[in-house]
Amino acid sequence: MLNPFVIVDDAAGLVTFVSEVFGAPEDTEARTPMPDGKLIHAQLSLGTVDLMIADRLDGWPLRPGLLQVWVRDVAAALERANARGATTITEPTPFYGETTLGRMSDPWQNIWWLWAPAPGQPDPAPSWEAGSDVIFSTLDDALKSLTA
Image (cartoon, rainbow, N blue to C red; front, side):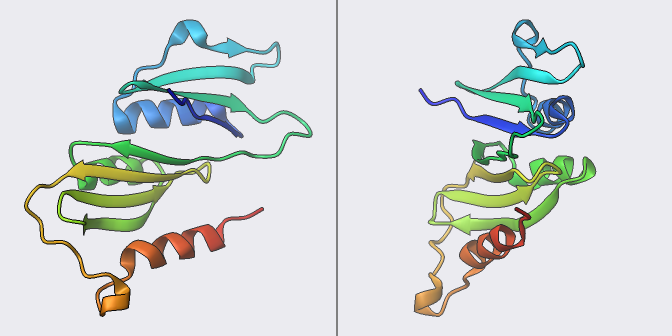
């Protein structure tokens, strides 16, 4: 099992965001604040995976994540995220016949792939076959816009 760990400014804010957007419970026993209140460790459960979060300390670089999550409804998850300061990168888009894909960037520069099952959709034609390249171009634009 792989459990991602992201380091951001305002870890407590990201914990609240993830909990509210995805309904992910925080393991409050794992929350480890430092004397100054910064979190050296927080943990939320998203399905069978734990997302671990810490505050960036002096001299530490930001380490935002590129994260993928299965949700019931991509549009609803994007709506909840946008209401909490996220930016939609990719609107809900059919993806290879069995899923819907959407992407967003949260206020901490994490980029989230949101997937939902959508059986029976037609496979999209890739851009190299004169189809849309929204799946690829939106991610490319988002990654190029991130600050160092």
